[in-house]
Length: 602
Image 1 (cartoon, rainbow, N blue to C red):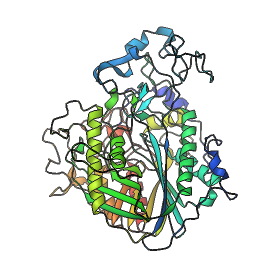
Image 2: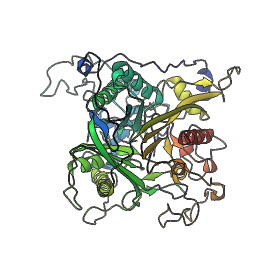
Image 3: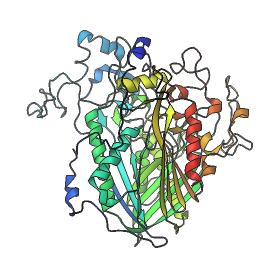
Image 4: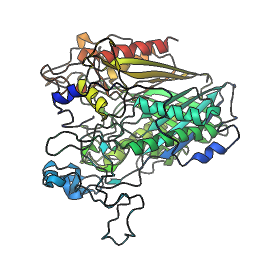
């Protein structure tokens, strides 16, 4: 669940002074020069990167994979003594300082609070008084008074990166059948904007036209312990309580775009003939997920795709499941993909303790499912493999348990999955504009705090931008024969995926759909009757991929969409309506569903 206290405490004066800067947007703008280290791949043949692999045979397709680390190795860190004190800190396995910068301690730095909150020892993080010090950093970062560090996304502002628990990744899968090629990429970020996805597409088209890729989907795992790629979680001014600079690093994002593009190209080059087994099946929620916003509805459909070579060696395993990777909470300063790391690790390397599973080999990829409103492994009793209650939920033990539990489910499904014979590939995409009703989001876009999100006037003849702004997003549908992957550009509430409002409440798992102590319950009589997104899809195997090719935050069903009457979007309406404050607006839902209907009717 995305948290960022204090981010929206912006004065009306700022709102009115930032309305002149219309952004011109080009689909062909890559946003960067080629800055990656993998340029050697461009020299493989005279025709550029390509693959000779193709198949028009029933049951045979071409598949290739690549994975690239996105973990930064050069960065500066905040002084540990300025961080909030907690009884338990993931990363040091006990009491200590961790989490956000303590505003009182930061404020005590007085006029030098912007330059003395971090160790200005350069991006190698070796200070002059340390034994390993060999001189000033060659990149000039040492002693320059500029913080070259990173801010973690998903919970609070001012949460600095101070170390790495597990690497974050871009994992790419490219498949081809009968001359049609699609690429899927999963990123360990809380979200990634369409403008950056389009830059990736542009680089791939420019670098490797010979790969003939018809469609590219870039998805975020939504880890709440990863680097801010959107700008929402930057540092707050300890004197005014306002974010004084965005949380993203432009240099880092340019590097990410280049690395992701090259990963897709490498995956395309590596394609070989193979087969795919696939299954979608309901697996329940026990020891897997919880819902902390009424109505209690969880889409427990798990999909597993297993790609094999012709001699049945595992090439890739794709798992689609919906839940927030947020168990480390807002108190960690260590980079992690949360339980997603252990899901992939359990599949790739096997699990020896408890209910063991063998290593599969190949690459594991996670595709996030319907997790909005609010599907999470938090606030549930979680037990280890010996049946003992895990007391500390914000811990690596807890995320390992959830990740391994999911890996075991995926393994069991993979044994049931049949080989898919119909593999005809199609890729559909619809770009569409939505009104930006959340004025605070619009301000951040305009100020550059949320990257360079383009915007347009709804009515070009209207002089004012106020209540007259729309942005572009998209939905896509990938068909690999009997397999369908429906993309959604934000955090989808499960009700929009499966319904679940009507008795016998098949997606509430014996729990009350509305808690008895809820003073502001959603009015289920007004809930939509369907068809829901899973109903609209035609495939035998159905994957819903959220936060795909964009990140427009929560997709709240219209019947339960409520905003504060006194401070809309700045404060939550009474009851469980936090998600609306991080939503683009209510009108986007109908527009999105209509475009999903169009894709699935073709």
